[in-house]
Amino acid sequence: MDELVQHPHAPKAFSRAQHRGLPLRRCRAIITHFRRRWCIMGPLSAAGTTAKEKPDMKPRDYSRLLAELAEAYTRHSPRSAVLHQEARRWMVDGGSHTLRLVEPFPPRIVSARGAWLQDEDGHRILDFWQGHFANLLGHNPEVITSTLARAFGEGFGLQTGMADRLQVETAEILCRQTGAERVRFTTSGSLATMYAIMLARAFTGRELVLKVGGGWHGAQPWGLKGVHFGPQGYQGVEGEGFPASVTEQVIVTGFNDPDALQAAFRTYGDRLACFIVEPFIGAGGFIPATPEYLRLARELTEQYGALLIFDEIISGFRFRAGDAGALYGIRPDLATFGKVMGGGMPVAAVAGRAQVLELAGRSQGQRVRFSGGTYSAHPASLLAAKTMMLYLVEHEGEIYPRLAELGELTRRTAEEAFAEEGILARCTGYGNEALPGSSVAAIRFPFREDTPLDTPEALHDPALCDNYLSEELLRLAFLVEDVHTVHGLGAVSTAHTEADIAFFGEACRRVARRIQPYL
Image 1: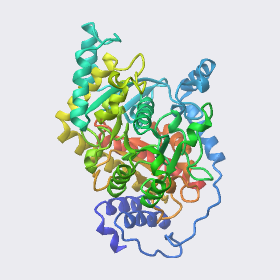
Image 2 (image 1 turned 30 degrees about the horizontal axis):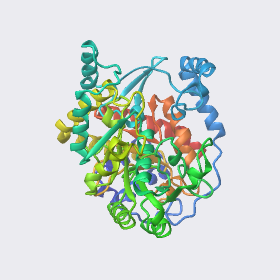
Image 3 (image 1 turned 90 degrees about the vertical axis):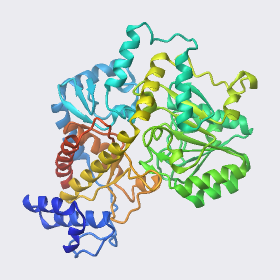
Image 4 (image 1 turned 90 degrees about the horizontal axis):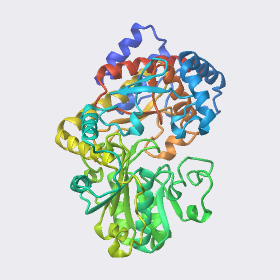
């Protein structure tokens, strides 16, 4: 065990395990964890687990655990349970966004401040969802709420449907911070990516759209193929209700897979309108694109005359006060923004080359009907966006290093806590040389120590990772402990503290002890 002392955090975790009298197999898990993090993986004895061993691939039966968790959660949150039944009388499944509707029922929230929620049952819940990862400063930050309150008090804030100075000022800030030449606002990320693809198709006169497996570009026709991993990989289509011809125009390639990307362009290049990709993939597993992959994407799109679209709905303003593409040194033709930019209000944008965006203008006969909708450029939303972006620019040197520090602490805390209970857990969300600091994390449960977690395929292949545990069961188990997670965990905000992460760590240990007998 001498190599254990080479990691600065290992002695603390190991001594805690010894103090609690954990069995040897659990102590071994801690050693294994730190060997992995420091790349000093060595052979364990026959009683341990090595990367060479073949894992048991039989599906685990979690039915008893699921029933136990559902019963515990219902006892824990009876008022939310009753209100959910009432909600089901009037709304589909009791809500208006499926991802918010955890089974058997979601916590019904009455207030939110900083890192914490409060529900109908009076519980304070540590939140890593943070408004679909939009609330970089936490829930209801004073810098935003006070600005909006003042504006409403002065008779400005509800929709006017008119042009105003605020639109000009907000557009200028967004363009300056992202290097875009033009911008047009809309109300959601789904609409922004849809309009971006429409612009690309009109500009190139081509029909095919290239995306990556596991990439989520909103509930719009070109975004609903290749989202979830299935028997044929990422070739499935989410849902019905749109022409089959639309999804037939979507080609799916591999994220961080240069060979697959080159093959896609060799096969379809002269028919591709665009390649749309997230620099930091979100729902697909919180994985940063490698610099080599994005450089290749830029080279191939230019070579074949297709447009490169960066979907920065998640990554925009999360890693710097602007686009993540700048950290890679790559300028796309178009980029979409939302979430963090809006400061908690509904706003999104398509930004990029003037020559492309002008297709939505009168000078080009409005070849693309990018009108944005009744509530596009809503005064309250743009005021929040302007305030948020200016605040991030002014405090960039403080905010982003702090977020990176908290993100690292959160990932390390989760991995150590599960290791102490003898469970192999690994977090995604780590940055790379282009994105050195990340404030997001997802807990995964690979069957083998050497499973690569750098592609959506690896993360969501049921032969490699226990996906039901990391997605459905983990979320419910954490709710019992007053921690709210989505996609395996979520994101930290500047409102989170070390004490909050310590609270999360204890919750991880209780969750690990609850699920350990079923593994």
